[in-house]
Image (cartoon, rainbow, N blue to C red; front, side, top):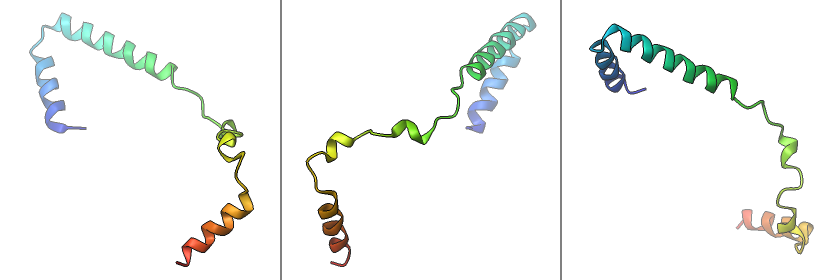
Length: 74
């Protein structure tokens, strides 16, 4: 967090009338609550199963691995 920016915002809020500070507080709390309730559930690595398989359809995997390993040793 940018401390300077945060402090500037806080300073600006303090200059508002109390009624506007309360309104800002309510609206900020609402935004935070909405964000907290829309956080997605944890994802599973298994959702990636099969992705990219079309990229490998014409490639001999054993040959590819052999060539890749050979490139490591120069």
